[in-house]
Length: 321
Image (cartoon, rainbow, N blue to C red):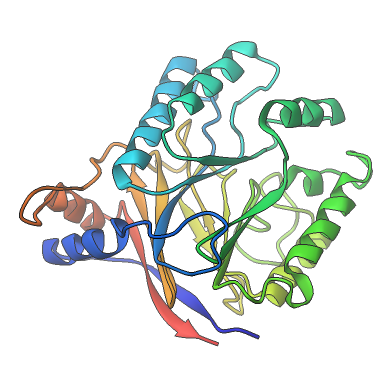
C-alpha cells in the first residue's frame, strides 16, 4: 500500500511574515500540469458548499455571494472548485434555479457539482438534476490526484427509494477505490453533501448525518482506500471532525447562504503537495491576498488578523504510513 500524507488540523495563530509565506508558497503555487495527468505537481483547489440560493430569504443576496465566491476563486488562481451540494433551497422554484445558473455562468474556473438534499428528493427530481447538470456521481483526475464526487442523498433515503441507485453508486465507488484500485494516485479526495457523522462515528442517525449501516460501509471503504480527506457541506457551519483512529478528516464548508453558529460565509482553500496538504478557511468578506511587484502581498496584514481572530483555520501536514 502506498504511503500518503496525513494532516494535523488545528486553529493557528501566525504572525504577518508567516502568513505571507503560507500565501506565497502554498496558496499561489503555479498549476503546472492538469486534468487527467498521471504526473504529480503541487496544486491548489477550493472546497465550497451550500450556495442554496433562496435559503436566506433573499435570492439576490444568495446569488451575489455565490458570484463573489467565483470571483475570489479566480483571484486565488485555483484550477477548479468543488461544490458539495445544495445548489438551491428548493429545486421546484424556477427563480432559484435560474439565479444559481446565472451565478455559475460567471465562474471562470471549472466547478464540479454534486447534489444535496435540496436539489433532489424524488426519482424525477434526480432525473431533472442529471439532465441539467450531468452525472450525480463521477470521478476525475488532476495531477495524479483522484477526486470522487458522490450523491450522498442516495444513501440518506431508505433502500429502494431511488430504485437501486444507492446500491449501484456504492458498487461503482468500490470498483473505483476499493481493493487497491486507486493505489497509484498520490492522493484521494472525496466530496459529497452529507457528512457521515458530525461528532462521533457511532452517533445515532439525525437529519445531519447518514444512516448507521451505510455510514459503516462507507467509512470501511474509505479506510481501505486510504483516502486523504472527505469534503462535505450540509451543516451550514465551518466544521471538522475525524474518527477515533484519525483515519482521515471530514471537513465541512459553511457555504454562501444562511449560516449556523454565527460562522462567516466562506470556503476552504487547499494546497496539495506530494508529501501532504494544507487547508485554510477563507471568510468570504475578507480580501484575497494578491501579489504585487517586489514580492509584497497586499492583504497580508488583514489575513494575519483574521487568523489570529480564529476566522481562518490552517492545517499543517505531517507524513505517516
